[in-house]
Length: 159
Image (tube, rainbow, N blue to C red; front, side):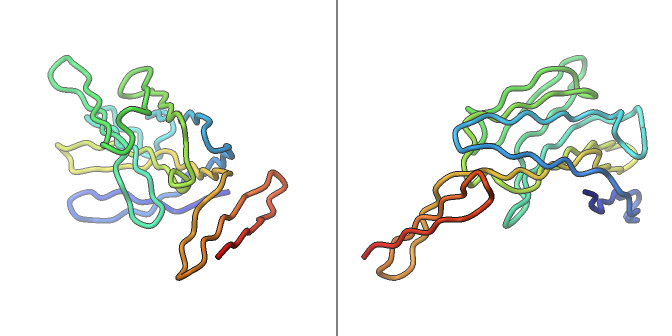
């Protein structure tokens, strides 16, 4: 599966294409994502920061990993703060999100940024599907959708 991504340089947008890995997890499991500059279409050795973004209804930052002087710093967002573990370096990092929920489903993109040249490159895109129960509220009805292992959906309604 493939998807289009882009990077900007001096306010110019350049379309690129990267592979999209599809992952399936059950609610409560962990998922591991690999972010590496080796997978970047434009291998620029001057990358200063790694963004892992989650895109579902709207883009949200999962974490920002950057170098400050000789130290590497990780700043996870509040939603993922206690569920993120990283292993590796800025240019080759394994990111594990534990205890995934239905709300964690969606696209995850690993992007590297070079602030000096104003370049941001998306290097890897993951699509995460999470199976589990989701409460849906509609007027008097309380519905649960269960995503079953075969890909089918089961809906329960009660008054």
